[in-house]
Image 1 (cartoon, rainbow, N blue to C red):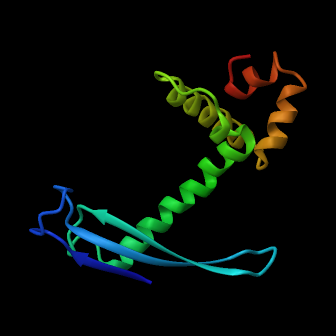
Image 2 (image 1 turned 180 degrees about the vertical axis):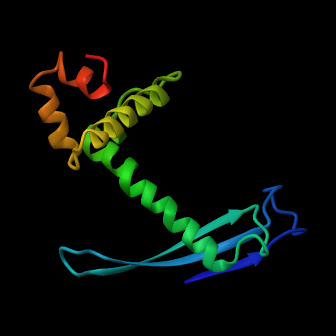
Length: 135
């Protein structure tokens, strides 16, 4: 369930905020069957004419899809959250390289990124170049 409230002229510290959104999210763990409930709050610069509560809910779900499809893979396969790279542009550069690896493996037909990395590691001097089309 998604509810939205227009928040212009309320003196908020978010100068471009037009709507505040509350999204009630239900999730079911497929292994255990346990149902959990989570409330998510967001702000947007979209007016109520540009985005109804239903549209805002769809936009939020599309963001979660990105989170589940890419960020979750980066964290579980590459242990990104445990990375010790913290200075300069290092974190962004490594995220870019991880994205390149994930997207290249998917383009090569690998649905399981960890298995694709193992497959690639068997011939580390030729397979990555073949996947990138520069061999």
